[in-house]
Amino acid sequence: MWSSDMERIVINTSASLAVAAALALCACASSGRHHEDIAQPLTPTEHYAIDVAPQPEEVRLAIHRAGLSANQTQALAVFADRWNDAGGGEITVQSPERGADPASVYRTALEARDFLASRGVTPENLRLIGYDARGDAQAPLIVGYSHYVAKGPECGRKWENLTATAANRAYGEFGCAVTANIAAQIADPGDLMAPRPSAPADAARRQAVLDHYRKGETTSSAKDDQANGAVSTAVH
Image 1 (cartoon, rainbow, N blue to C red):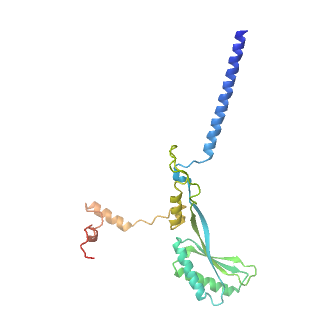
Image 2: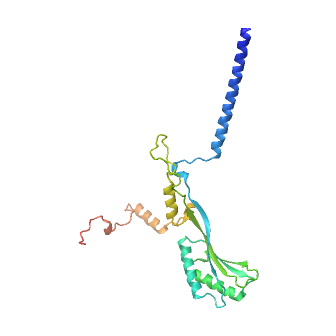
Image 3: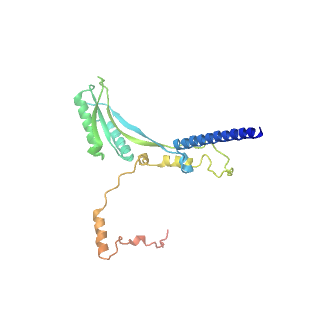
């Protein structure tokens, strides 16, 4: 009788241990899948990121029978300067169809194109297209391009006790200010999307260096006397 009771206890205990082990394995597997689905930052500074999004920039010009007015020419000059500061890109000139007088539309669009070309816009970056004005005689000529804008994180919302270092982890705001400053200072946010194309190599300079190297001569440029590092003795 005693041996049967002990055997039953041993069997029940083994079954309980098997169930507990199975539950533990399920928990581990579930936890592993969770960590695979959610990408964890590699460093504390990667908790914050810069959002880069395209933003249209355009100027609307009324259609004139005589072409561009003086004010429109000035507006296009400012537009071209902004386009150049933004790193260039494609400019579209949208002329209204089924709207104003076709001859006036053609003359205004042609003068706008020629003026932009005179401000440095190459033919490859200038495209003329039409849009349906749906009978609106006041429909404008739309000149525009798309550029990128950068938006950094908003910092200072969840300050913590900076003296609490027992866990040896970065505080919640760590890296936020640096990321926000980069977003505010970057000249062309498009550089965060993809690198700029490399300039072509200087074949003449490369050949000159190879010629000097083959002759056993110095391959570097000649030293400038102004770069000798001497302290100026001029009286100020």
